[in-house]
Length: 74
Image (cartoon, rainbow, N blue to C red; front, top):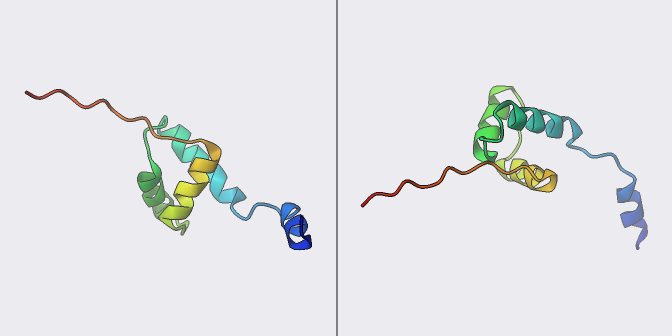
């Protein structure tokens, strides 16, 4: 490991507060919201984050939205 990597390991997470809000929105809607809707909800609450950042944070935490099965149409 290089010195800059060792220093980076000891830094606190920059998105700690945002992660808590994302988790609360996700559990508030029982896992139905994906990163797009959570991104819009964060914007409504006054938190500005890029949608790719929201997606990365959700992936890191293992938060996935539930998908409805497609209905069969003949």
